[in-house]
Image 1 (tube, rainbow, N blue to C red):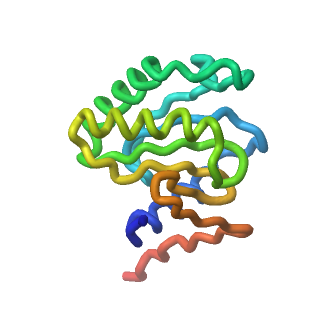
Image 2 (image 1 turned 90 degrees about the horizontal axis):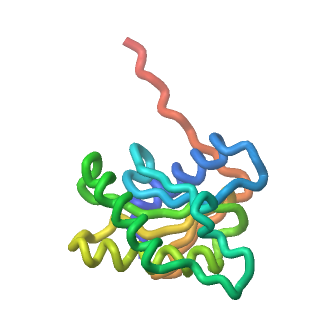
Length: 150
């Protein structure tokens, strides 16, 4: 189950993805770091990590090395980083999630770090595959804080 603070950060992460990604179709990206702050990213399309056919599985060893490298860099800016995948589609299980998030979970466990979250973020919402928690929005509105008058 996702705690309320993480739930609020995930809502902001969905909002940021909607605001910064104008294309309808974009390459999936793995992120490690602060959900709504500084993070290290890896575009999965650049290493052939997207499976052209079901007969070609993602190389788990290479995926583990990529996640470990992202984690080591993310630890320089965040004490307890999260790992999340941004992709097109709906926040529901997808082959890409099932190929990368278990690897990320294993890497975090081997490093002795409890991740802030292991989630998938899309323009429609987010979901956590391990706990099956999710949230979706048809229209996401985020109010920005109004500066106080002095």
